[in-house]
Image 1 (cartoon, rainbow, N blue to C red):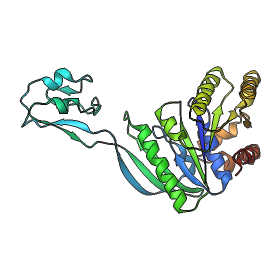
Image 2: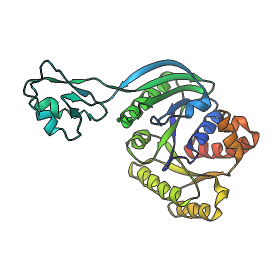
Image 3: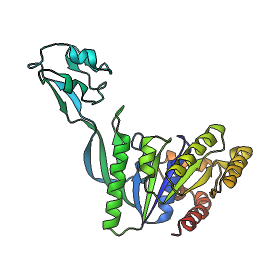
Image 4: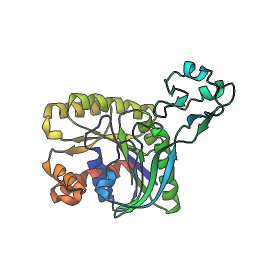
Length: 285
């Protein structure tokens, strides 16, 4: 079984357009959307949700007003200003247990807190694992790890040989959780100064965790000079460039019509087919 992860150092680089196109070209695969803070792959794949499950993050503190003696210890010691008028402000509570341990009369308990949902869905392109984290909630890395674990277990049970994962932007905890154990990371970059900077940070992350990686240049014709800079960097670092995707308004039109770009336009399929074949060769798939 092989797992391909599509990531980018920054948002808005066209990662989901590329991911959905590769999923369509693969024919059949297990699909995983690990961008749990702003998921959008399901908009293009339009899967049918078969099951949903609450995701619990760190527990939140709760004060029993009948037991509380209003000693003010919890209010004075809480570093997050999460307690006011002997009531816990859930949006501020970090679930650190400090007030729970300090309370002299055990008036504070830690209560399970639902901070998102995970889903199992079925699409025309394969079975899909995805999730949605609540607004302002944390533990996205834990939720990503849960999704990938379920996708891998399902792939083994179903004897599937390919998982394609749409990863989150950036290089933080969710991206690290997405990369862990992957066979190949496709780093989507644009020919701009900020995108190249973030591409390099993402490459360094892959090197640190010893994840095999390749670079795909999106909107490559918008700035030929910066595209050449990406090629030179990758050549010096011995990183294979998967290919180029030109700027094409058909990508935008496909997204606006909630369709996968390669299914929306034969021209886009012609562009993406060689890229998919190159990726298969790199994976020896």
